Amino acid sequence: MITVLVTYKLPAGMDRAAAAKLSESAAPKFQALAGQGLRTKHFLYQEADGLGGGFYAWETRAQAEAFHSEAWLDSMEERMGSRPELTFFETAVVVDNSVGEIQVQAA
Image (cartoon, rainbow, N blue to C red):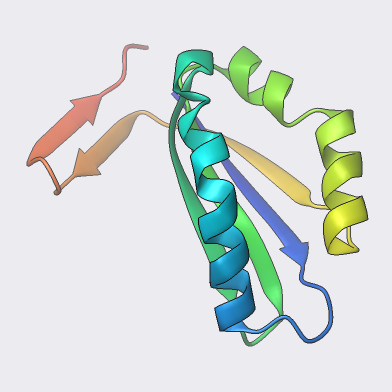
């Protein structure tokens, strides 16, 4: 599994309520990506530094890279006013307390 941390500077004046509303309206689009390898997406908001972002878990690196393309980066920059920064992580173990499981990924 590949986990991608995406961070970007939020537009000036975007508070928690506005960020939450934007996230809620976008969420169904990410549900539709289940067939393209997206396992989970967490919408992130950090007030202190005015940051937003996402924490994505993908089945494969190729699927993650296909989604987080230059075109996607360009569209995010247009919408949010800053270009996102991406960090890719190989994810070996996931603790999922919501279902009481520890998932160990094949090497």
